[in-house]
Image (cartoon, rainbow, N blue to C red):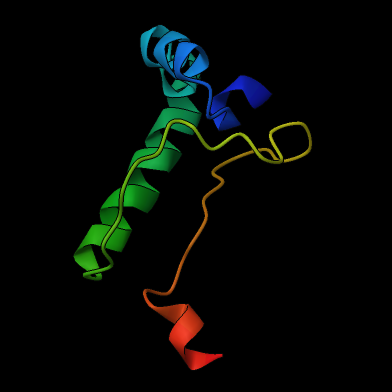
Length: 76
């Protein structure tokens, strides 16, 4: 799974052609993911699906996502 974090052009090309983990979710997990995504949109939270996030997949279950505050470094 760490290939998704690779910066090597050949690895990036392989990842672009690889199946997305979303395509392998069971129906309940897909519904939960979509409901979470739609709720964020309704709350006017800008969201992007990133199929390359692989951190923690060995111990998380259910919907997993990362959140970032834009320009957060300016506050530090």
